[in-house]
Image 1 (cartoon, rainbow, N blue to C red):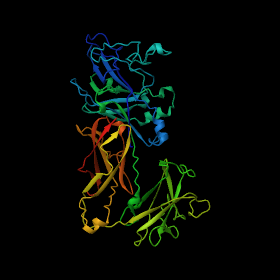
Image 2 (image 1 turned 90 degrees about the horizontal axis):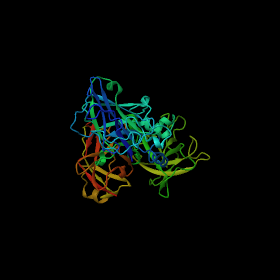
Image 3 (image 1 turned 60 degrees about the vertical axis):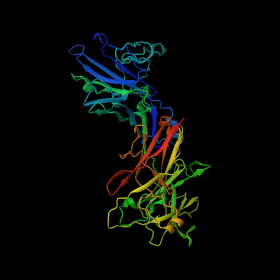
Length: 508
């Protein structure tokens, strides 16, 4: 799972705008039950110098994050990006252009309220339940008067992040990782508690003698499931296990392409579990050639390429591996081998940088690796593929996290009768592949391809082929969804979407 979404639990619009009479301001109005959030700046409507503002407040429950991090289903701070996403709501009024919003933490608690009226501001709360321009919360239930310290809301301006808009019709999607992680840590004083976000016009623009009209977003009460405000965690947890795609070092390839990564998965009673004697510390690996029938390792450990990191001078027969996550370890190295080799064996153990035979070393696992060799060609290649999901079900439950296993082969693969009878078609590993999820009924993209710096929709692979995990809880029940794939094509230096759609339905 590389995308995790939290839906807003509380939201509201607060304003000091004038009512229809252009005399009375709606500072006591509450819009907590509205399905719309609104941000605007209006200049000179009631008088030549009057200003009117509306600001949006939105809050998300973060109580499950620590649990998910402990369980290993959500990465630690620094390994995940958090995005606030608000979706544009079309309307008939004028929209601002070329403007900037400040998205910043609210620094005191506030209440949502049950007001609806966003036109006449008739749902007045004053000191009753629900926030407005003056009140943050109901005074009777708190030790103070319940007012904002500053009319219009209390915010941590030093933590602000900015979002720019050109047409005024865009969605808001902004990285708020630092704010969210501060909330999770709970450091910095009570004002750093999770009181949600304020979305306001850039104060510099708000001081201009001009109007920025109204920008509207869907609130949490909207009937449109995928338009609700969400806080989205994104991370790249793809595991590129080269056990089925292991290449011997070659002068034809750049140094990075000569590196191979092998993984060790420690399953105990079907559950990934840390190796007790190692925990989260380093693990060792040595490579052995095979016996005459290639059924087991034999002889002494083979030399790896010294890189000064995982393989150091004086210890070329030992790779120092690392901890990945609960029960998962990996080792990255380059191996020269020889033209006569077809298979080698990886032996995982603990101990110092010395050999596996050193006193105190514990042997954990022996695996097998088939070797490949790089080769040059005299013509370019623009490959086409046949793709399928071998374990796709027609239905998935909403609380399920499903693993989709992808089978890929070259489209022009044309074996003769003997090969067909004797050989199982090989699953081709695509080293750089992305997935996309969309709703079939209208094509609405739910999770898009991520070809940026954090490829949170990148497929993993192991000896069995490519795969990815999908958290069904972020999908609306009783709809059909489609999966598409895009493979990086080095010949074209771009991603190419594959012409296949794989469908499934989500049910409660």
